[in-house]
Every structure is written in C-alpha cells, then in structure tokens.
Length: 485
Image (cartoon, rainbow, N blue to C red):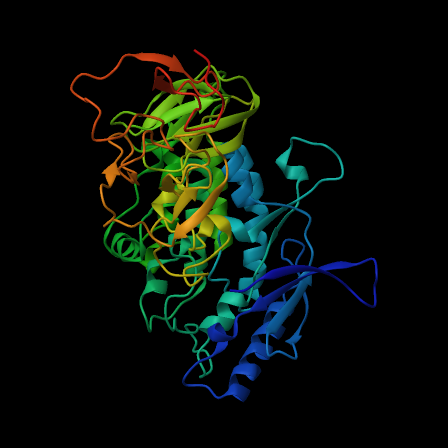
C-alpha cells in the first residue's frame, strides 16, 4: 500500500513511531472527487484509530503531507513478523501455533466488535514483539496485529456500508490469504472474510505454505472451485481434528464458516488439546519441499535430491541454526538461515526460488500485496559482460567462467537472442556468445568445437562447492575460487 518509515515524535523526543504512507493512486477513484477521497481517508483512519486493544498496533495520528501523500502514524513495534519466523523455522508446533493465534484472534475480534474488518490479514502483518527476558515459551511473547483499516480505506464504497458490510470494489490485498468472496466484485463482506484469512494463516503455520499458490488467475480459479489439500497430507503429526477445524475456516461458502473469530479459535484450541503427548516425536524431522530435481544442502553438506514426491526428509540435523541451500538448474539458489527446534515437532520448509516470479513484484512473503509493483510485471534477464575478456553472461553470474574476473558491466536490458553464434548451456539453459568457453553459472564447458560425443575426462573440481571441470580450468565459474589440480 505504500512505504513504512521509522520516525521520532517531535514532542516526545524519546518516542519512536512508524509512519506508513498510502499511495495516492490507491486512494484515487474515478467516482470520487478529491475532497471526497480525503474525507474517506480521514473517516477510515479515525475508525482504525478507535481500536484500542493490547494485541492491535495503535494508530495515533494521520494526515496529508505538503506533497499530497496520505500517511498514518502508528506505534513502533520492535520484533519480527510472523513471516520472518516462518521463513526461518518453516512450520510451528501445534502448541506454539495456538499460543500465537490466541493473541491474533483477540486483536481481530476487538476490531470486529468495533465494526471494522481487516481484509488483509497475513503473516507480514502480524508482529511478534521482542521479550525483555529470554524465553522459549510463546505465551510470554506479545503479538500485535497491524495495518488495521488500510484495506478498508482502499475498499470502502462511497455509499454508507449496508447492514451486511461494505462491498468489495475490486481485488486489492494479498490473494494467497484472501477469502473467495473478496475476489468477486460487488459481494458483501463480513467478519467471515477475516476468519478465512485466519484459517489460511493457521494452515501456513502448520503446513509450511499457504493452501493455494500460483498467479492471480490460478488463485481465483482454485479458491472459487477447489478445496485446499488436507493438512494431514503435508504433515504427519497433525491430528484429524485440527485438520477439520482449519478446513472449516477455509470453506468456500462463507455460510459454512464459524460466525466469529472467537468461535473458530475455541474449536481450534479444543482440537489442539486432544493431541496426546505420546503422539509427539522425539526425533526432529525436517521436510524440505522443492521442485523435482532440486539439490538440498545443509551447512554445505549435500543431503539429497528431490524426487517425484517433491520433498526430502531430514532426520539427522541437530537442533540449532543451520544454513540451508536449495539449488535447482536455471534458478537462483534459495539460501537462508533455518532454526531446527529441539521439541521434536515436525518442521516443513518450502523452497522459494527467485526465478519463479519477477523480482519487481512484491509478494506477500515480502510484505507486499496484489497491487504492489515497483516495475514491469515481467523482466527478461539482463546481460552483463566481463570487463577483462568481454565474455557475456546472464546477470546472475558472479564470476567469469573464462578468466575468473569478478567485475562486470551491463550490456543490455534483455538477452540478445539474435546474436551471432549464440550457444546455450546444455545443463542450465543459459544463453551465451559462441566464443564463450565455460558457463559462468554451472561451470561446464561450452562451444561448438567441443566433441560432446566424446568429452574429456573430469580431472579437477572446486574444493569449495564441489563443481567439476575439465583439466586446465583455473577458476570456478560458480563461486570464483581458484582451482588447483
């Protein structure tokens, strides 16, 4: 919806606040005059500020800058978002999920009591505050729900809301977490739209990913026509009762969902309480989910390849923080810090390759929403040229596979597919000029003059990343380290 800035209150010098801007193009409406748009913003900002609850981020002020930018002033929450927690740990235990959702539901229910819908609930809007004392008990961690009112500001109709609630005026929000009725223009919304989002968040916390994934067209079709995969098919330590409760919140028909957020959470908590202590795992079980053919490394040690099941199961990783790297030909590696918990609960981590979506699109996992774009919807890879030997590579290359140089300059915005004597790497598919000798991404030999029917034997390999090369190679095309025979 805009940018967030950390600021300091001029009157209370020691007080830090968060200032969130709202893009003018979101507030603009062809049916509204400028004065009406301002009045609408002020009305909804006051409504958001009226929510007073410990589990809701307070809105303390609002206004419009001299440049015409609308903004909201909110309390500054120190900590991490639920998204970052899930990014690090993959999935959470049932007990931790209950402890966190208890506070989330309390904040959402307080807003519903005030007649306000959130409409953009997602992990990036849930803040887990830092505790002054070190603790592993999630009940000691304080949770706040942010961005109340922003989704309502951009959705509210110029007419007063009806008894059934304001109608959706277009799809603005985070599609992975939106209810099906939010994707249909003119449908009246109520608290059950937020209940669907709560169910989606619970699904993500327990299953490692949202129920549905894909582009906008695919998401609309899936949410309107399909039911999500059962949680028990993703994770073995989830009971049927928990799965049934989460699926009830994800019902396509709003009439089949619980009437209030508190009603749903009471069902969820009761189902979680039926999990017997004897059913909990003692050995940590980590499931890495990725496309077929991906390679999984933990602390630079290869753990295996992903087969047709779409997952690799790890049972020998000790508790603590580790470096996870999932590599796939033609994609940028997904490398992150993960934390293996000592509680023995199953953890599911979904690989996220940057090449799967344009880097100019702010996805929900990065705190963005459907309409958050910083550039074109699709951008072809740029071409860079080595400043020493003038070999050309895709922009993802960090080291020249021909001479080992690490300095590049951009040649063009898109790959020149019509260049003379172009050659494609047979392993990763990257396009290069015909005079390139090695692939700068995966390190194998290139060139039309090479006899692929009778390749030279591999005689050297990189000691850092274990990539093999023909004899005579001096530098690793993947990590740039010098190769010794």
